[in-house]
Structures are given as C-alpha cells and as structure tokens.
Image 1 (cartoon, rainbow, N blue to C red):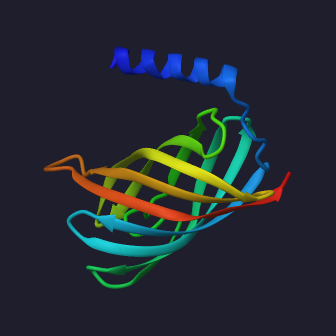
Image 2 (image 1 turned 120 degrees about the vertical axis):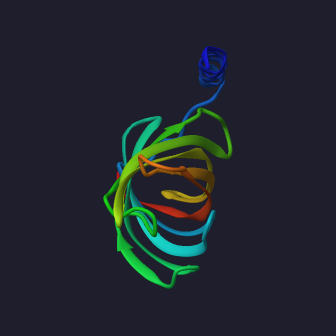
Length: 167
C-alpha cells in the first residue's frame, strides 16, 4: 500500500509540473447512464450534481436514477438501485493535457431490508467537447457490506455528460 501511495504522489507531482488543469465550473449537472453487473444485472438512467470547490477536487451527489433489469424497475433519489440511504463521492482530477482522468471514491448506506455499508471507487475520464461541457466514461466497483455474511461486489460502467451551471 505504501508503494502505491508513493507512486501516486510522484505521478501527481511530475504531471502537475507539466500540465495545467482546466478550470471547471463551480457547479455541474451530469445526466448519465449506468450498467451494473453483479448478482443482478441492471441498467440505470439518472443524473448527478457536482461541486468543484478546488481546481483538482470535486464532490458528487446523486440526484436521481431509474433502473431496469433483474428485480424489476425502480425509481430512487440519491444514486440508484443499491443506494437508498445516501451516497457521497469525491473526485480527484489528475493533471494532464487533453483527456482529463480522475479517481473517484465514495461511501454510503443502503437500506434495502437491512442496513448495509457501501463503498465505491474507480477511475473516470472527462473529454471536453465544448466550453463548460464534458463527456465522461467511468468504470468502477461498488462493495456492499451487510455486516454479516458475504459482501456483494458490483461492477459499474457509467457514461454521460457534465454541463457547467455556475462559473
């Protein structure tokens, strides 16, 4: 783990010396589509709100999602099929030119029957196609720990757009 942190620190330091991070809007709206692969296979359509208080850090809140697939159709507020108790993500942008990569990690609670703790993480890529508008692709994993028994692992692939609302 120490080696991974050291490598990431060196990568961030070297790449920040060479590249400029684009200035992002303070608030972004992000419609998205997600594919969930785990014990159940589902497809979801939803939206996020992102707050960019710093140049390379954003906080993401899920607004709503409607999902289809195994287990029927569900409409939820704040993040989707597995997130009933709320979910919060942090996005750390890596300073590079062109396509803007980022790492995302988050946590939350689920309340589908029994309360469970949820962690998520992965990497994403923003591609700027207009001023204040980006396309994104974001693979990741969701880990749900019910506190008893086995944890559930869900692969998530999300794509969509981010539109700047306030500069």
